[in-house]
Image (cartoon, rainbow over all chains, first blue to last red; front, side):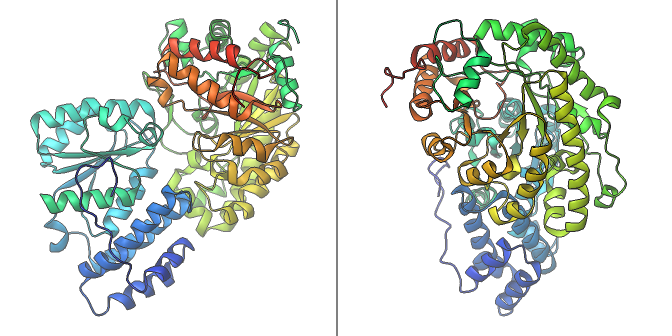
Amino acid sequence: MRSDSPDLPDWNVSPSPPAGELEEALLAVDPVRAGRIIRDACAASSPVSCIEVLVIPVLEEIGRDWEQGRVALSQVYMSGRICEEIVNTMLPPGCPERTSQPKMAIAVLEDHHTLGKRILLAVLRAGGYEVTDYGSGVTVDGLVERVTRDGIEILLISTLMLPAALRAKEAIACIKETMPETRVIVGGAPFRFDPNLWRETGADAMGHSASDTLATIRAMAGAS
Amino acid sequence: MTGEVTPAERTAVTMGFEEPDRVPLFLLFTIYGAKELGLSIREYFSKPEYVAAGQMRLLKKFGGDCLNPFCYAASEVEAWGGEVIFSDDGPPNAGRPPIRRAEEIESIEVPLVEESPSLLFGLRTIELLKREVGDDVPIMGSVISPFSLPILQMGFGAYIELLYGEPDLFWTLMKKNEEFCIRWANAQLEAGATAIGYADPLASPDMTPGDLYRRTGFIVAKRTIPRIRGGVATSLASARALPVIDDLVETGSIGVGVSTFDDLAAVKRQCAGRLTVLGNLNAIEMCRWTPAQAEAEVKKAITAAGPGGGFVLSDNHGEIPWQVPESVLLAISAAVRKWGEYPLDRVSI
């Protein structure tokens, strides 16, 4: 649980026995071994339960390791992509377990650097969540219009450049005016370099990493 | 030393790991010159004369010790056929990448400097600056490393997947990028650049695991840097440098740009006598500093890395954001003069 995320329960769970092995396979970027570990571990349970007790905790651990400087961003990215593909075979997009979740969307605001969004999408989808991808270079007006039209309950704004991070404030103010119940999470480099910046945007939380954002969403989704 | 020391002399002394008259200050302005000239960023980057004029005004106004003809990272990928997207208050972005499928690596041609308008723009800017300052002020040329350029050539995600999954295509691309990087760096040196900044964020363990870097980007850097006919300082563009300092020394680099997330004193100890340390003011937080905070941050950095030379005060990324108030930059400039005079008796060491 992060000190700058609002009132979130601790979602950390004790790692299941194959968790260490899965983490090792993911960090070694070995999709075959990772797939075998997940399938073996999940043979006796439902896909949702398997994701909850194995995939999500391992991705969260990898995210924490990245924040601590113990693993590289390329490993975080590949871990998310591998898990996303495996989970898609267990829990195909559009299946009832996914569609019953809060309506979520992600956008790269007025910026064209998409790695953060791609990592987040992979991790959230690997966590069993359905997320609408609004793409990159999204304008403030365009974002407000789409969020309102789609009735988005949790919005993720990814940024790399400082001007985009500053523009998030304008977008969030407009969204909160028309849809005050919509929760907004911001993330990206400017918010890491200036830990107080996210509060100025009016966002409900900041995602320090993809897995940190996943934990925040689990809390928000549980509360909604 | 006297007050007549030129910025070039000051920088040369510190890069020789001796103490000059004071700590050199590299304020690496890119888009900020547009603000100074009252132009839009797009207009500013339409003529080399504007960029040169902007650099000269900023040099005079804020009293830095270098000129930075670098415009924006996307100008390199523009030469490869990439697109540039301008912003009103931020650096131009790279748009759609020129390599859209990994197989295109085989056929993509290495651009020639003399046929690339965006690179010729950079060379002309360097020539204009050289005419203004001669050998008195260092002119920092810059290249994106062959190992990191594919972030813009392909998109970050696609490149990471190439790095892990397509070694043959990866090395084909590296060969082409090395050829391009060496030509582009040497053209800048011939135009009048004093040294070259080698931007290699993927060398950081924040981005690439150390063992993978040693098998890829490290080899690329060792093949590339020695063929650049001038001094090369490696910048990891805000990513941490400390764990790879020994590797960077082996590449032939003579300096390193340090992240605000690095322990500056530890980096200095690790670099001692081998690499000059540049850094590491937080350029994002800088936007909201007060002048007093700016002074405190300058003093802290000088205390950590100033003793013995081998240190240039700079930001941690290589770009002063548009949003940084002039009052903060003036405070940084005043603080380096107040606290950075050698011997460093006034800072607590």
